[in-house]
Length: 111
Length: 117
Image (tube, rainbow over all chains, first blue to last red; front, side, top):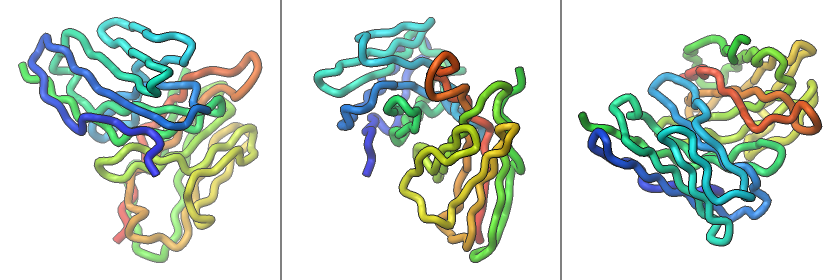
């Protein structure tokens, strides 16, 4: 049973464009929502994370938007670059950091 | 500060065999979690160790077992391998679950690619 649902499965964006990935969850015990970036043959690397007491967090070109009432959160990648081409995973966990991951979104940035 | 390391990088086994995968935590981290990532899917939580004790387990059978050592390195053991065990096995470390050492960040290693034939 997938506890975190992620969409789309893949997306293609032009260089300089905006990539948007959406996730939804059901478990109200979740209180930590990280996004990970993974390149082929590598482990996931933490990009940015948010807790439900804030609705938005921005770090550089990456922004998380969080809607607690809808139990949804999203990642926006602004000014997408070819180096951003990777698979992105949303995840969620309760306070004990046992992460439940989404199925992943493969992002391709066209030059 | 050294990162999370895992060994071996790749491994090929046959059905029914046993395998041991190893993980060295990032310096100062006392919590290790193991995940299984099948091809094209997100990682699935296997179990977590905190200060050498198992601290929760995902939906994996008992033939998946683990250990954490006093230096906080860890092992994942899988007995009676099945074809579906073919996956990338990831470990992630963090610096604690509570108190002053608690951190939100889990650092993942590069993984061990296990192929079961």
